[in-house]
Amino acid sequence: MIKLYVDFGGYSAIEKGNLIINRNNIINKEDFDSAELGEVVDIYSKRGKFLGRGFKNPNEVRIMTLKREELNENYIREKIIKANNYRVYELGYKNSYRMVYTQSDWLNGLVIDRFNDIATLQIFNFGIEKYRDVIAETLSELGIEHIYEKSTGRNRRRAGLKDIEGFLKGKKEETVITEGEAKFKVYVKQQKTGFFLDQRENRLLLERFIKEGYRVLDICCYTGGFSVHAALKGAYVVGVDLSKKALEVAEENMEINNIPKDRYEFIEGNAFKVMEELIEDGEKFDVVILDPPAFAQSKKDLKSALRGYHMLNRFGATLSNRYLITCSCSQPVEPDAFKALVIDACLKAKKWGKIIIQGSQAPDHPITSKGTEYLKCLFLRVDEI
Ligand SMILES: C[S@@+](CC[C@H](N)C(=O)[O-])C[C@H]1O[C@@H](n2cnc3c(N)ncnc32)[C@H](O)[C@@H]1O
Image (cartoon, rainbow, N blue to C red; front, side, top):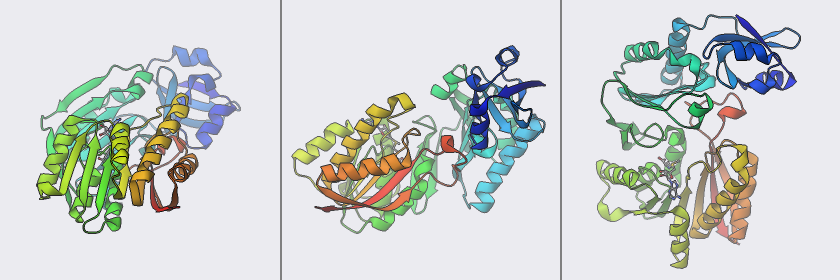
């Protein structure tokens, strides 16, 4: 087994629960370079203390375990079953949930979302690549016969792997899931893994703030996640999204929840432009929800991302005369920085923003280190100053 020694930066990263070790933090780089992609390697401190075991990737090691245990088919199977049982028997999830959330479940670089008998699969680790068959067999044991793989995007390219998108098994691509009283159609070929499971608790919480007849503006509404919950509580909803396809599904979702057509409207367009127009028209809403895509993928995008969030929140605060529910799924945006930004955006809109709830990602996306925490969802009461 190849032994790799890390410098203080690598050591302290592991101490903080970060299980991705950059090549820059490896002292014996020749040994790292000589290992095959996907090969099992051991990580040691400079002084020779065993720190963990993982798979070599092009520019990093993805640590899988902090024990000296075999990384083989059994390991992958057991960890998937354990992650699933935790969601089902402890958290109480039933048919739709994030079954595996990368390093939080000791499966660094593997994400599996379950939607009834369909799973979407994402692999961002060379070492896990060769275990597709075991993953499929394990999912079959758990009652999943359709697997849609969506191993695409930045994390995949970072690992030097080509994008893969298509059915690994079966061919079913749509299903209906439930979230509290709400029903949602999920098409696995849509954005992300088909549905934003991470907002589940925040969508359910929204219901507490809705009263019959409220006007709700759902910005970046996707397939109507927040919109459906608001409409079920008697609100009139205006949803805005750039994606025509997503809005078509949002309409379907309103229909399967028996929401009359005169209780909602979906606008296809750029959130910033639509909000500016609504402000010009003097429109006001009781609740404004802002759930944009990640404006910052990495630290280098941070400055422009913060400007974007500030503008969006200023518009949102201007349009709301009661509540503002505002989210950021950009991992590099720190929770405290986001709070300060939102409060400042409210002040610039001449609103007194009071944070009443600080939400995060749903419990099936457990946080084990800074790198695994990404979603911020603030509920604010906003009053005229
Ligand atoms: C994080 S998702 C929203 C998820 C949704 N709230 C839910 O609960 O399912 C972000 C959405 O923003 C949309 N989007 C991206 N850029 C946009 C823009 N400039 N204007 C409007 N929508 C945008 C995407 O199409 C996507 O549907």
